[in-house]
Image (tube, rainbow, N blue to C red):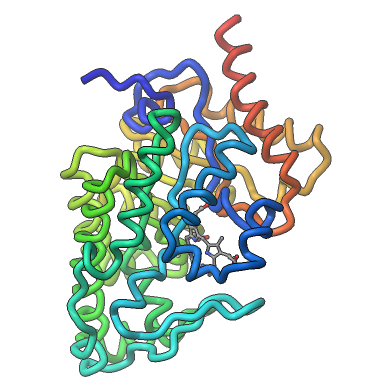
Length: 348
Ligand code: CP3
């Protein structure tokens, strides 16, 4: 069947009328509409109520005019049915009450069945497909095994990932057992999201850039590959994202995906060479540039579009998620710049 949607075409490396654009973390605290709902409900309450999750998913679609919707959820939700205790602490981020440190901790994690245990995520997807009614595609997502494992082992965010790496080096059997459990769970979870109606999926390996290429190959690649391969077998585009990945991109390509997320630390065209021009790329404006004056934002946006050079397979995005105090009007302006740039190129 012919693919007509701009975002889905770019994911498949097909030519488009205008470069598609969406933003990681496009729903969130920088939006007044989001903050209004957050005054009444916690993040986890929102995730558990499909109508609220759907409403928030649609907020940036309406306010910004982006070319894709990303389901409002969190990569850490599977931690809940794993029985580890998840809380979001104001100003501090996620906290996992019972981090996994030993083989018996891994073995104590109960089996997780996406439909029974994370059914509220799947319900939000079904509801959103009805509400979007073909207007823009819906992206589902999960964390990659390494990034999720790092939270589960550390018990929260980390700078050095020392507890995670110590486990890799001192108790590899525990680390591998945990990664095997997570990659099986995440494979089932991402497939369930696609079956519920997600038209593309993104696998967030946000913190994988902490690994050397050698360690990536040993401790992350085989597990990411399992999740990415399971998703790709469902015939929807799979976006494989990480940050600080300049030295990992060729290995990430080997792990799988149709689209590779690039952060701003590498020029877009250099990153594209590293993953190969047979696949699509997504990125890569520094989210901090949205705090610059408008003329500078425009210059940076145009630089990225020029380095993509109208080649098929570029999806405009930030190099990482939207930051908390980002001015809404600047994001809206970027959407317009990206769409207009393509129009000018076509006229030439
Ligand atoms: O619009 C969207 O992109 C969809 C929603 C979304 C959230 N989390 C909601 C959220 C997505 C795609 C995520 C993914 C996620 N969650 C990642 C990968 C993306 C990335 O940024 O690297 C990670 C690492 C997490 C884990 C997580 N969730 C952290 C570290 C935090 C706290 C930091 C922070 O920004 O407060 C969260 C909380 C979270 N998840 C918020 C949102 C909108 C902030 C929410 C709030 O308190 O209202």
